[in-house]
Length: 538
Image 1 (cartoon, rainbow, N blue to C red):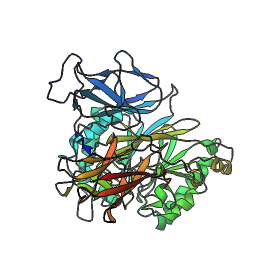
Image 2 (image 1 turned 90 degrees about the vertical axis):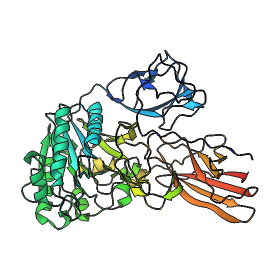
Image 3 (image 1 turned 45 degrees about the vertical axis):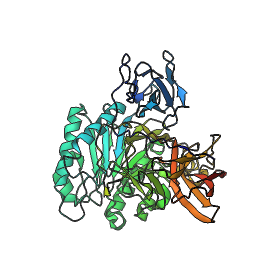
Image 4 (image 1 turned 30 degrees about the vertical axis):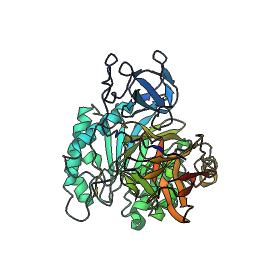
């Protein structure tokens, strides 16, 4: 089979300004990225969306989070898109052989009903200076304001700084300055900020001296109770919980009293603690404090938010229910992925389990439910290693700010007893998704040749009802019998937009040799697609 040219994706590190409707692109220059008539954010009505682009360009878009290609749906001017449910809209402007950078916008579509309280839940801020964080957090707070203009509380769930026993406790004052400046800039004067202790926060004394007292109102043990618009929140100290009998007794006593009060069985109680507890989110990865799980097991009203692991919130395993609800809240500095996978980088396949993506949760508590939305603060595609150096300090503007990391979760407390509530949980091990990904393109595999003349296998991304996690890729040189590629390659699901295809280098491919490729798409739960195959010549 003849090799087709490899298309090099244009970086979307910077968000292009919306194109002027009357301008026309230069014939040899890429067109400007399209703008939108309604910015991304939270709405309580259907959004009618038009694209704005340079004259003579064609705007193509997707609604599934993948980067548009020349075969994606074309926008017809004067015929707006109707966004009536939570959606990521990604668009590219094409002009001749040129294409703009892709831009993505996230839309949350709600009803007119007003929640009792709104929380932003974040963790693992890991701020150490102004230089790399001032502009970043201006962008992050702009994203917060586009969804919750006046959140009732922001929970920062541990690891505000990056102390490793090396005297960085004073860095808490830098975090405090950055957060206070942005709260003032955005007019969030009524927003409470509530902090938990993490393993990189130096000491409780360092936290207390770094922030206003109201942000960390503990009584000595690093734990405390708050009330936000009638919603009870418990901040626990997961650095000591397992061995702290006093803290354990306090939490159990207060939860028992609240849930025994009139109407208490059906009211959610929020809990934040830096480290996840055992047997809950992300199949228990990086978990500790088994006694926290034991103590919460009697209270299905509890919704526990935890960070620490940096594990991404795209993955549906980030929510778990058994005796109570556990939610992984991701990371504001960089995210991690299960180990043992490779990623397509500018230098071919490389072992990776981190990406410079920042994410947070947006939580709305209603009378009969709690809605949890997953939001990207920054998810532009970058390699965590640049020039051989590890870096998660990519600066704004972000073309992905405010996009959705995945569909929202809804926690309901259905039943008049604790057991009935548990029986009605939906995010349980028994209810795990069993739908496998599938390849929908007629030619899911294609051999391509890069600019350096090397052979690569292009995989057009499969689809899944939740998320394609990775691909099992095998390429055999049938001329010699040697294995040319054997890898588990991530689908780039932590980036927005996700690439429409992945180009897998066939290392040391020999011209004229015959190759046999076999690829399987796998989701986060291990559900696997039927294999697709391709025979080609190097």
